Amino acid sequence: HNACCIQHTQHSPASPISHLSQIISHPSLHLTMADAVIEDLYRATFTDRLITPDENADLISTLQELQTIQDGSSTPPALTPDKLVWVRAAAFRIACEYLVEDGDADDPREENVKLLKTINAVVHALETTCLVPSLEEEGGDNFSKEGIEELFKSLYETEDEDGDGDEDGPVISRAEATALQEFLTDEATRPPLSVLIWLRSTAFRLGSQYLNEENDKAKNVALLRSINVIVHTVETTCMTSRPLTLELPPSHTPDADTDFTTAVQTLWNIDSNRLTPHKDYRMDVQSSKHPSNKGDAANDPLFTHVNRQVFQRPTFNAFRSLLDNYSAYTGDEEEVSQKELRENRAFLNAIMETAPMKYCHRYCLAKEVEYDGEPIPEDESDFKNVLNSIWFQLYSRSGGGRRRKLDSSGFEHVFVGEVKNGQVSGFHNWIMFWLEERKGNIDYRGYIKPRSRDSTAQTNDDDPVLTLQFSWNGVEKFVGTSIIGVSPEFELALYTMAFLAGEDENVVTLDTGGECFDLNVKCHKYDGGSKVGSCYVEALAHYED
Figure 1 (tube, helix red, strand yellow):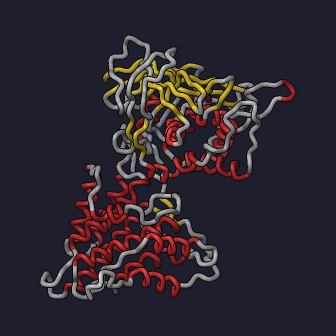
Figure 2 (figure 1 turned 90 degrees about the vertical axis):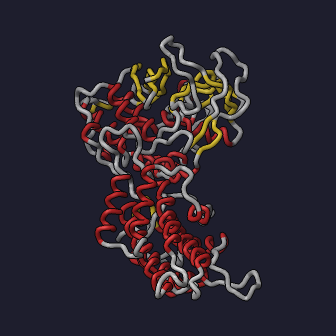
Figure 3 (figure 1 turned 180 degrees about the horizontal axis):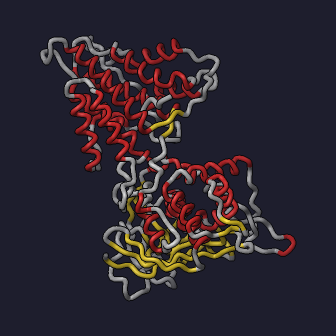
């Protein structure tokens, strides 16, 4: 079964119509070359209100190319899962330009019906390229196609709300969209997998019956917006995004001679989920300070904006679910529930579907490293078991002799952070920093420049490597370095390679595109060398390329 409509992935069911009307009505604020290519394809397709086999093939080929990591590229692909909503909504927005009014054609209504059929075909091409179903084979006992059709029709019905004697165009309220969402997710009425394509095509088929009889363009634009809302709601309840292209480009395949610097640079180049500064997030680094200075050199938060849609990406979504699974204080024994074990496994499953973690696995195999006396397994499932042991198995960080408590893990220390002996320990992840800063738990105190005299570049709001000072719930972190904007899989791949195939200290040079950073990737092993004690980067120098 093919997926039925464009969607981002595993996001919250709340607010199914948020921002959709604005997306249809206005172009993206960040129109890239890739966006322009997609819009040009749409216009070429909608001009005659028909989609030819060649146009369909061209659209699919373009979408596939935009999702692919280009060989030798140092930037993510143009089309990431969180961008898919815009891609589908843009099809509706541009189609509005081709709605026909009286006098524009011999049979305007027939032309508009053709246009709806063409939009449906475009969405179908998008779905088969970018989505996979999330429905189960069996639907709810009370599901019926008749019930869906009646519900769709009720959403298209219009009333004369302004009292001018003329019915307005259809507008789906937030409450109506939520009701549709609940119908599609309720155990009793959820649809089976076999009707997935039918759901979307029915939205268009029934929608065509509500085209304005006088071919009023404004009212037909309102109809297209309503169809888009229904499609969006079906997406968010019945589907999930297809993983990005997984095969590593030829230039990104490690061998026994690949050094650690090359491996780190490659991870950067293939991090398809990495965020773009000033577009996906914005920072205000403010003033610099010396590590020993306990004063506050920053009156405002570090992050001024992070696009929350990034958490619709599978690895970001899975990563975020792990961050509330721990007690910050060493000495507090961790209790791991079955739900948390499932979340750990879901995260490992998600990251192993990405290029950075596939590269990490192949790098470790190429280096013929061992873990716990055994060669690194070639099977990905077995490799995930190694990752689980390295990162998630608990150990005691607080000591305590015979009464020692299992109060820590590598993942908790590196990505979540801990409090030990009155200071923040670990806490090297930018996502955790932003989330805690939003809650008011973080007080950003300013950034710290690299010590080296070779550091000639200025620290700016778009720097991806930042050494900073902060307090977390009133507890100090005097020096900590984070790699800003990278994906969870990038960091886990980087630190796993350091743990399994690196040294305690690994000095590398990272070219981030115009600027270079000399970094020391440090790795401290714990529990007899079988688990991550800590991994982080230390910024040694920062200079122009």
